Length: 354
Image (cartoon, rainbow, N blue to C red; front, side, top):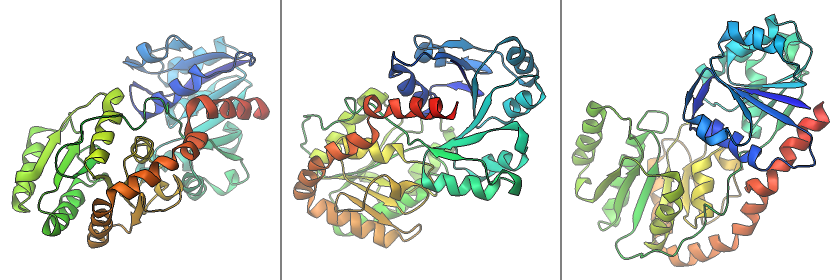
């Protein structure tokens, strides 16, 4: 069985990481020949070349001829409209699935332009995204099946690591410095926390590509809110070291704060919880679907900064008890999201579709 994944961006981001996890756990009993196509290589070759035949230079025109020259049983297009147009124009007979990962509304507009005869169904990562797909697609596509396969990760890379936990509590925030992740909300909640806990430190992790003027805005805002003396910025950290960072925050009696306006899944929440670090998060998108709300995973309504600060403060005050409870939940999270356990479900899903 010959399968082709098409995704415009050959980058070391979330989508390609999910492909990596699935491919490295492809059962040998499944007779699948895997191909992946991209416009260009921005690091994905190193990640995937061991597991699939890779093709680069695929735009709309070259993809049409590429599809016609190869006999694929199933083509899976990930959030890339030009590849949908290409397969619509190509003279081929195969199953076509659209895999939807993005939660940004303007990036979902392409769904409304898909024709009924062009595809056989959708795959996405959460119940929330099922609803977004249904909202955007035309009436004639409403009968197309939508399957859910949640994101997965390597739980061996995300566990509670024994690190030196000396120092004051830390409220950590992971993400790009943009309005979607809402770094300003993190700052405002941090200010509210500092009013009752002046010893707490506030860390931003991420934003390596942030332009210099934006960097200055971040530090200026921290100074304006009078938290600059306890503010730290780690602009880049390798993914393999994130568990150590989360573990450090946990050992210091802190938590991860998520201020996103929307998420299709919520990988940073899952990574934090598996590393033993409690989370306070906005109650948006698919974030509430990760796991049930409990003392180690608290939700607050978007823009209710005081509630977010109160829930973060409660974790700081009861961190030892909460961290122990979170450790007891680890096996449950592994069964739901570990790539070595769950990836076979993805391949079985494709097999059933064909």
